[in-house]
Image (cartoon, rainbow over all chains, first blue to last red; front, side, top):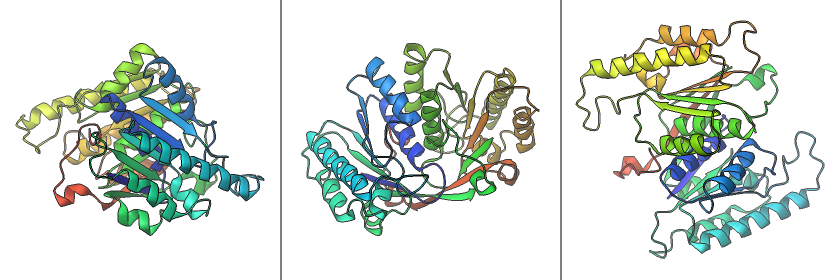
Length: 182
Length: 182
């Protein structure tokens, strides 16, 4: 099952994280690969703590990004971001092939594609692994998050929600808050 | 700060749960009160495990509902659902007044209002407690989830996202899955 959370509103990554919570509560195994974020997020801190202290082997979070791309003071050459995103996709492929995970979250992968760090076609190849016959017994779910999801992802997905911004305090000049936005 | 997650698409409750994850990762204290669900959900199982084993005193989840209302074989008299929702709101008031929580999630409270289990005006009274001057030092966030959010909630909120259904497998007759939908 392929799920896409996209749109310009708040709640895409967090909806995926909530899905992880629900799956873990049911004893399922969850992998999160973050394509843009580095290790500085609240969710990274949380799951790192959980994975070593309670749910060993049940949850893994890999923040494989290099942080925001071309915004908020990012000065890293685009090539570095590309390299990071490509490595993240390689890792995703390896982990999905391992057959170990019931839920795989590819966080901000839509953004990585829309910024041309990786290609939609390459992502679809990796996703297709998930659907190979009955190779794996566990019902497997892949969640793709991030604004501007490519049309090919929407077409491929079983479930798509658009998080639509109705009201946002940033529009009034409010600042991003630690523990809320990241 | 008041956040509303509404709309007919998947990802409202899970976005709130993800917000809880992010806040907990930052050492903040999170209370979740579920207005419709009982203790049978994956998120309940997960946070119960976490609260006793890692984050004692940092996270509390109270599933105060009586389950689905008037659908999926619910035979409980409406009065019982009303009683449960009213008690949940009373509890929310008490907990918010305690000043203990940085993030308070009132899950499916929009649904409780739209089903006329509780009144929007009574919810707004409770929310207003949160905004009393500088009574509490901690930046406080309240998240209201559920489809059909009353207009008064949207008006009061600082941030509103509509989770819009673009594609959903239930439309093709798929069944709700444990660990995905609940």
